[in-house]
Length: 332
Ligand code: G3H
Ligand code: 13P
Ligand code: ZN
Image (cartoon, rainbow, N blue to C red; front, side, top):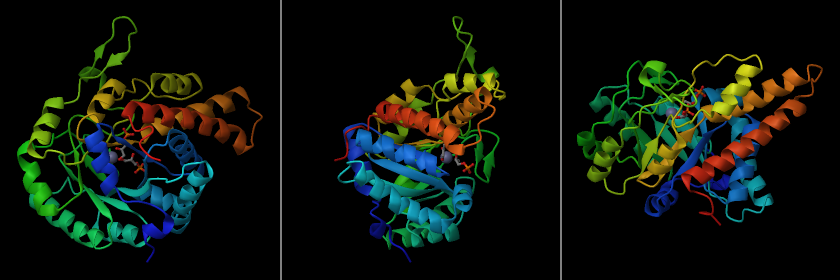
């Protein structure tokens, strides 16, 4: 049993309360490898932004759970070395799909877990979430739950259509489960293809796809039911067009990729939305840089020569996201 407290991590409790009251959101960045982790810590330390290191089931298997625990401990030490006196870093399980997985994460140093039972019938979602909450809270670990289903793939959880969260269910759900935060569905989805071209309009000047707005009315109705309760947005990558263009210009194929406009994320951050999940944008930044270097320098085979530029690009990306979400300077 390894407690996150031994690793220098924090849970989300105080962080979320401050974010909700302060009108900003904490970035939750998914990572799978050292360069992503370095870039996240460099950006958060430089900006003095609380940050959530987010690991999916697949990422945990990819990295190895033992190595991951030391990477998280190393991330805290590295943040201090960079001059962040009191790093506020959360290690969070993203889209946990079973009690056993959540328990294993609590037992190996995670400070926060998500149980995603949103695809189950309502009562089953409540029962599984409650079971995870009971175990996690006994170890001072915070729990994110989900109500409503996002379109697209959620690890091994999938749904063809988006079912918005029903505001009339949130009080009952939060009260009966005891969860610390709630992921909701208001029109975001995972990956680089959040909307089909048919769902978008075309900007007549640029010819680029303009997606439909998020359901801010549903968010407002949820906030009215649960004033001040921490709300989470998944699927919040904005899919920067410049990365898509670089990828496509260097042998990639991402036609009509489209994400959530950043103005809408900035708007959501000012509400009770206090955690915003970003994974795809980091993948795009990394892939764009790697493709460009390898295309321009076909003789290059030192990984540092293409992963280094990828890391630099991710630092730029994360730094920018921290600005958009308003979390810069919120930590000491
Ligand atoms: O929501 C899912 C995250 O983007 C993680 O994706 O399961 O491919 O690691 P993954
Ligand atoms: P994106 O695919 O939009 O980056 O969403 C990531 C996410 O929600 C992780 O849980
Ligand atoms: Zn997600």
